[in-house]
Image (cartoon, rainbow, N blue to C red; front, side):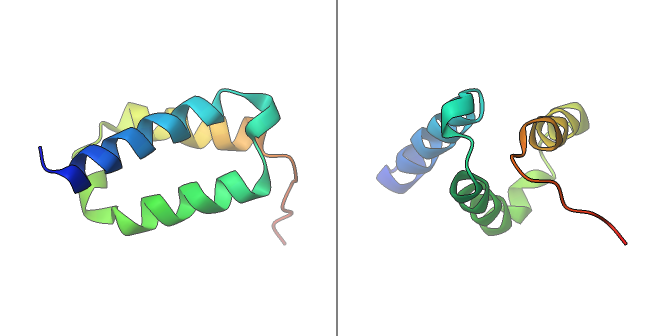
Length: 70
């Protein structure tokens, strides 16, 4: 594993840990995660749908602000 891959893996682990800590779930954290997901779209195809659904539920359940659809 090269250094960039190692750094990316560490970043992912830390972001997932932060999502489990209510004190760290801020709009800034969600923005960072959104950027990471956007930057890694090609990798999403290899992630099981259950994991993506779980992450989406986590976002929905813990988001500190609600966006109304209308």
